Length: 120
Image 1 (cartoon, one colour):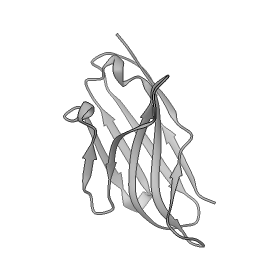
Image 2 (tube, helix red, strand yellow):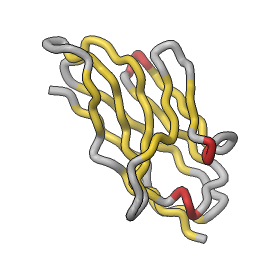
Image 3 (cartoon, helix red, strand yellow):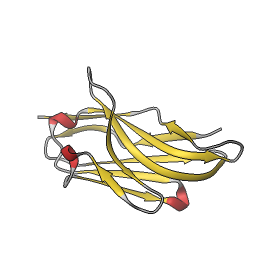
Image 4 (cartoon, one colour):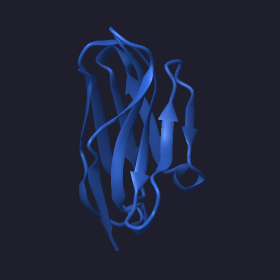
């Protein structure tokens, strides 16, 4: 069974920083893309950033220059460094991984979500 567990959310003042982590565990054969999505109240879940197994990154325009995604492939972990946080960054942040378990094909897996609240 595959699990994605996020950590690092919390309350921070505008202009501050937070670092999110997400570790994938279980019977994993390989991981392709890992990424972070967020969902604010009343809005759809949207991509924040993702990173391929080769290290290619992709960012939403709203976070370019402020957020940095990275991964430790040896530990099946992805990170999101968030700087210069704004109130509009407030949302539940979800980790996503496109991975292949040992007994099945590639599929999309989600973490449980972690709340990030930026106070102005």
